[in-house]
Length: 268
Image (cartoon, rainbow, N blue to C red; front, side, top):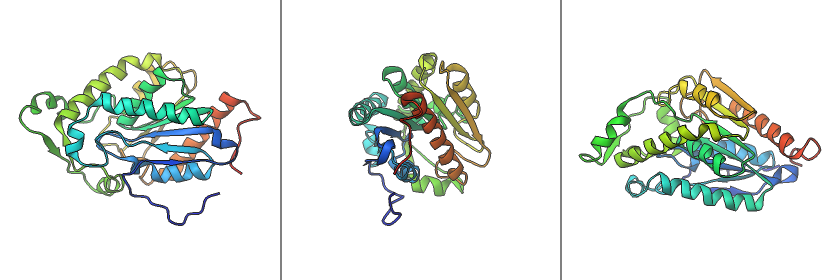
């Protein structure tokens, strides 16, 4: 087991932590959300590392640095990095479970169509947004470069720990919408086991997104969980411990299906 000393919960740096025991052969690839950073996954990352899993949280191009850097990127850059990161982790582990938050969930589902992932953990993945303003980005990109974020408490505290940008490049919203449209058409091709988590107090992603994902994917093994007290940043919100436990339970079920009962185990 790892000690709790010197743990960092707020950092935009990507991280790779080798696991231990029987679970070390299972890799967990973590993909953060739009304008976010790997900091979204640090808390759950430590929990999974303590369970013995090998953990890798990526930092997507243009993220975790400045909105100006992000302005020069698009969904093909983000997905290209995810593909490279998966291949690197798959070379180290026997199986890889992909965990994506928000836009990261879209990238994880696309990856599940193009790579042999052991499972997908989809957290607050957008199919329908609560606001229709993103549709205006196609026109706004020719007049303004950024939109300022004005989060309400307590989500502003969650936003701070996730190290997300306080302003969003308009052209990147346009690119995000293109990714969303493509993944929506790919959903019937997703066959890997999928776990879907959605906060009922999510002010960004409409709750109908989770049900839509559950209905459209072809996976024979799929699970949908709603968390009544959680916002969009459900990995950092008040129900996070329960969510971590549910995620671990799903990963264990994937291991049993992937390796068999004898080989699926826990950390020493």
